[in-house]
Length: 127
Image 1 (cartoon, rainbow, N blue to C red):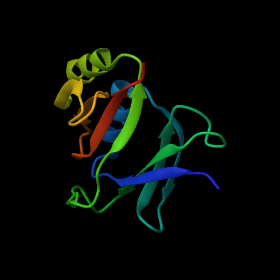
Image 2 (image 1 turned 45 degrees about the horizontal axis):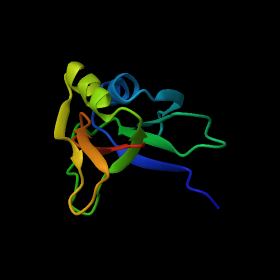
Image 3 (image 1 turned 90 degrees about the horizontal axis):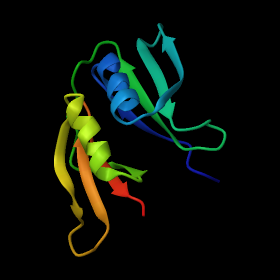
Image 4 (image 1 turned 45 degrees about the vertical axis):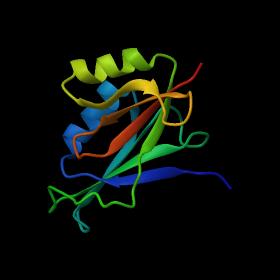
């Protein structure tokens, strides 16, 4: 077994795709509309789904907002340049909600950014 994808419901598919592709460098791998169900699925990631875990954005055509809930934590992405990644996110007009620095009670350098829906993405610097 292996992890295939994580699914997030989004209220603005275009804005979410723009964030994940432009700010975080993912590629749209596939997208399909389901008119009878009134939803669209968009899969994004850093490599082919056959060997990589990807992100599924689910856009329900009749919803523009969601309550995020307090059980969800975050998605984590590794980066070789955490400061540069945060600068890019900020330059594109998105929010860096925790600047790069060591995690509490540890030495791993992390930061948090926020997507247009409000989901938190943890950036972890990989030495």
